[in-house]
Each structure stands twice: as C-alpha cells, then as structure tokens.
Length: 291
Image 1 (tube, rainbow, N blue to C red):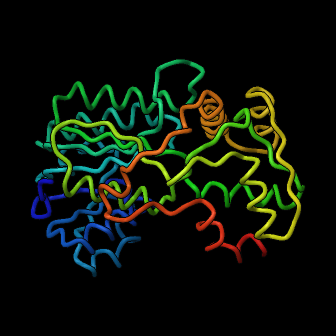
Image 2 (cartoon, rainbow, N blue to C red):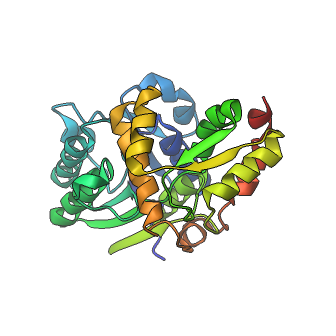
C-alpha cells in the first residue's frame, strides 16, 4: 500500500463520533498533517492539543471551497441531515475546486436511487457525484453499526419486545470504532478508485441479537418480525424523525433481501486488526444494558 501519512489529510464532521475517532487514529498512526473539520471548532480543542489542525468546515458556508484549501485527501463522513444529498454534493464540488486528490466516503451497503431506498439513495447520489468529479475515491459501504443495538436495547428491555423487518436474515454489524479506524486507514493508504463493504466478522440475525441482549441483561426479549410499512409506522408513532425512520427501515429491508449477509476483510485490511464481533461489543457495554 502507498503511504500518504505526510500529505494533508482532512476529516469532515470531526466533532461526531466517527469523525473524532478517525482523527485520533490518524494521529496515532503517525499522520503529520491532520485537519479536523467541524462547524464548532471550540469543541475540538483537545484534538488541537494533540497536534491536529482544527478548521471550520461548514457544508452550508459560501466559502466551503476555501475551507478545503491545501487538502490533499479528504474523508467525507456522511451526514444525517435531511438534505444531505445536496450537502454532500456541495462538499464534493468544493473538494474538486480546492484541488483535493482523493475522497474517502462513508457510504452504505447497496446504495441505489430507488424511492424505496429512503435515505440510502443519498449515498448513491453522493457516490455518483464523487465518481463524476474525476477524483480518485474509496467508497466504504459501512454496514449497520453495532452501536445502534445499544440505542434499540432501551425500549426492548423496557417492553420485552424487539421489532424488525429483516425477514429473519442476518446483518453483519460493524462497530463505529472499527468503521472509523478503517476510514482512517483508507485515508492513509488507499489509492486509485475502489468500492468496499465494511463489515463485522459474521452476520447476526435479530433473533440472535434478542438472545444476546437477554443473556447479558437478564431480561427476556422477544423478537417480533414486521413488514416494512408496519415498522415505519411504529417508528414514527414512537417519535423517531421520518428521515431516520425511513433510513432504518430501508436497512432492514435490505437485510431481508440478503444485502447485509456478507463478510469482507476490509476492516482488517485497513486497520491490521480483525473486527470486533457484536457479541463482544455488547458484553463490553454490559453495564449500560443492565442499568
């Protein structure tokens, strides 16, 4: 692999969970010119103290291209904004204008423009924009984060029920930390143009997730399968924002179609470590599940 550790490397969304870990990984692996891009620079003072340049990067700002000046390679961390397709298209255009040479993008499995894809369609159009820019790229299609199970555990533990629309098929959970370290590794070493799925070590069905949560928490949980429409209405009724509800349902339906039931070595390739399993991740967070 080529070593780009002495080039100027920018991480967007560095104030978020994944972006912050990616910056920390770049610094730990000896990158010499790391820029932590964020809308709130004051929140990243500890990264500045560790050697990163903290720079204001706002996808809504009219001077977006200027904020990318001098950047050689950029990790574009996908946002969760309802208008992220437009947001990210602006970021790609600004990167090209600023002279960025390579974009690493955190995408999703099976991105497509279909209306049924919900928010996953944004990933498709962002990939199209990056490819059309002529820049080199690495698309990291991150599978569902293991961390999401912790958020879903609270209502499941309270009610004893877990709902999904996966049709009983497995999903290959990857921890956010593994995905972030993989993205940092790609920023440091990837070249040319490549599309990769980022997965954990093995797919896990929701029936097994329920058993894992039950075993760790000591509370019985029953997995209940629903249709996509039923799950969407239930999420909306629970107060989840429509954009996020549609995204999560689309992930479930993709799992039902078998798109998440795969295993890759991408994490190990870019981090030098095997990915953490969902079971190990949940056991490491046992106190939160028992609280």
